[in-house]
Image (cartoon, rainbow, N blue to C red; front, side):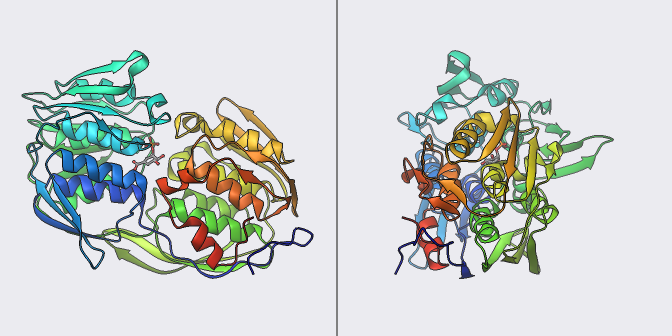
Length: 439
Ligand code: S3P
């Protein structure tokens, strides 16, 4: 029976949960295969709404993409510079990664493209990519404050650029490096805070000449233009940002013990795991290996007492999407958890600082918010709950508060579930398999 008895703590979560493919790596696999010559094959592709947006956009730009009966995706690419002009405006739904990376991909091709997105994506900042991409010789027409819809007039004779990142963003870095593939000469991107490096890793595999050098306080990534990408066989590991939900749920629900196989352990993605270990979490990282050019491992997570911590701001890029679920978990840890340097959370799929603090406060948890920080005052045991949480159609807010429900005396409800399809369609059914009881 899958009905929760609210007068008792939730029964322990147990068993193995499988996590779908990494979202960031899946976007890149589709985009780079579409820019390669020949047929690439992708195993373990995430089939969520965001990735469907990237697939459908790449098809409109000329790539041929289909799923085989055995689950492998085949992408027949058009070659670097081979995109054809789409016939209509392209709607990228909720996907910021599609909007930013694909803008980079098309802006050094002599075509015009019109992009738009859903209510959330049309509010997200695009000046961070429009400003650097204009330096390649492309022109952009956007709404007031550089918001979508945008029109990109791709450069006829793009020339490589030198750019120093102003925001710690892998999407901006990737947009610039991808644009550099079809430019004359070299493109250099300097980042002072390390962000996820899936673009650099995967582009090298596809045959691009990518050089990375360590400067005194920063890293320089150099990519050679007029590149030729060759088709690849790609395997995609499980997404640590999706694994974060069952991981934190198991750490909150008394007596739980779960395993989560095949999770990407790229050092630029495991900030949450580091933070959880500092909180005293019992997490074993087993069978470390390389899979699809990325480090992966199997994780075992056991419930145990946790203490609040101060998360260093420089860790933010390596756990940027995990702050909402960390804030939920922190509400059941002993003492204060401080998260500083997180102002980027204000411009994600929703204003996540606001969504998290409103939702936690409504459910009886003491929380303080500033422009760029969150402080949660945690207490072990059950939280009061009983409130309906506004998710702003943000998948990570919805999944975070569903996890909070597992330790609430009164149901914690969310106003919409459909956003979960953005990244983790199987979330509810997979969580139920390890014993989660949602009302
Ligand atoms: C992503 C980078 C991050 C992250 C997003 C995916 C990527 O965004 O929040 O979900 O795939 O490059 P920023 O690079 O803008 O921080």
